Length: 428
Image 1 (cartoon, one colour):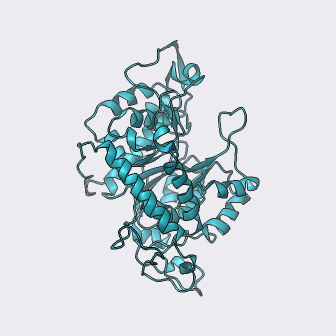
Image 2 (spheres, rainbow, N blue to C red):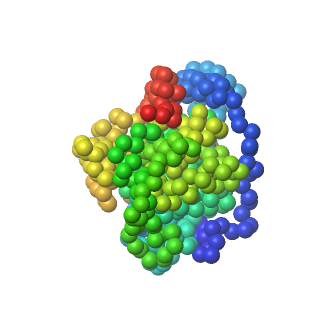
Image 3 (tube, helix red, strand yellow):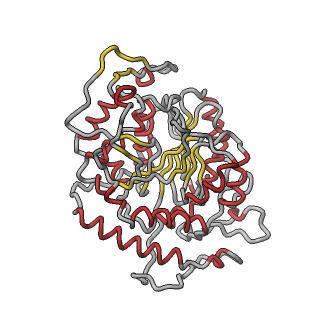
């Protein structure tokens, strides 16, 4: 466990990020890679024997029953960089969320925004340090100097997300995707299942739920000019609106969608380290726009020739909205459990604190005991051990279960029935 110093985003001793690849790939390359990975993923997952999860754990990967297209090797598991955010009083929810999405090959940055006093941040760091696996893997970091992001619809939330992504680029030289979760989110599949499915996906894919159909948001969110005091004040204050309104831009097309995204490392580097001026231009535009987090990444990826062909119009989240939609999605409960499972989503949004449905998710979907991390192929504890993750093995060994099948079927249906390209950054 590392607590980042208050005066810096990351230690100077950390390895620098890899150099940015400025050579765009051909459009056909992504399509061919997509078709191959779908076929390999479907064959492998549907032929996987669930009996391998029973009995004594082993460091040997279970062999598929059917011959793969490339039988010499299985794709190496990816690594995910998680941003887990909460406000004052949310430390316990962050720790529970961390335990539910934990895997030793991932990276985690925990952020309590400025609504939380400093002693809560310090207590959170001590709690993380007290967990042996977190301390041994040294892949959980607590942000020492918090950003102001109490209002998820303010531009300061976007600034906080970009800051966190820059820190994760600095503290870890190897990860493949960036995922932002709040304390209101919760996983619906174990990390072994998610990493297994993503290992068959092109590493430059960006899972962003997006649409160019803005509608009424043009008047309520895009055209009004706002000022967010969170960008320059240390105390909480509501955003205020200017009397003027602006015209919609014609140099680029605006897109909107869910603030929850799964972004490739290449795209994060493009936004933060890239030489293209598009990300900075759009950052200045959205600095005075309401709900910037729901618009910025969507607009950047769809207006970039290097990345608009890598966009999957799905963020792997299960969300329910009232009809007509309200400002926030519906709170998920026990009545929604079956639909959550059937959706094949990797995450659910949003849950109440300590809702009984979270206990059911832990018990039936994640197999997580109270106060423990979700077990995976890296856990070597025997049947007589209360916590199977007290003894650790190879983090590259994955033991996917039913969650991998549900998620893979959802992705295969999305990517193979002709909707993939027809739903990529289409201007409506």
